[in-house]
Length: 146
Image 1: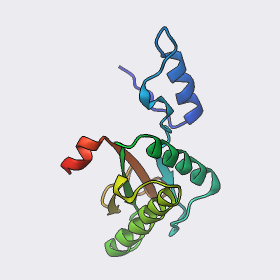
Image 2: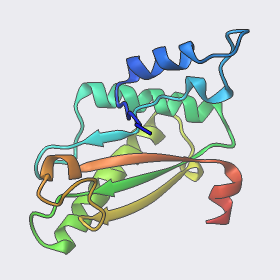
Image 3: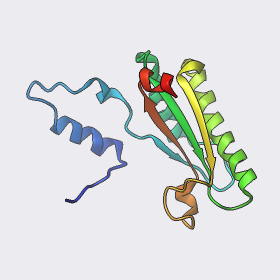
């Protein structure tokens, strides 16, 4: 079996519409922004304008779904010490959390996890891909159990 993973929001939206039921209705999560991974430059913890716009869409979705929680995973590449990478990952996750809160998301809807360079997305040598924040949506039941 071949599996194709898409990180293109437009293509994902078109695919969702193509697989909508006969009545054209999508599931309740169809309005959830599909892009949940945001990458950073070397030694940076600020995002560019398109990433900020996407995070604002996530904020609107979370506000519209009161039982929804989001865990923000902060990551770093393996340059520098492990302690500094955890610090940088925390700065990245906190910056995303602040933006969501500024957009009206309740602090109680946000959980933070910072990994530094401990959980690379790809090979540790692929530094650019490993400098990231990822959003993980949780239902209220799952979030309370943690």
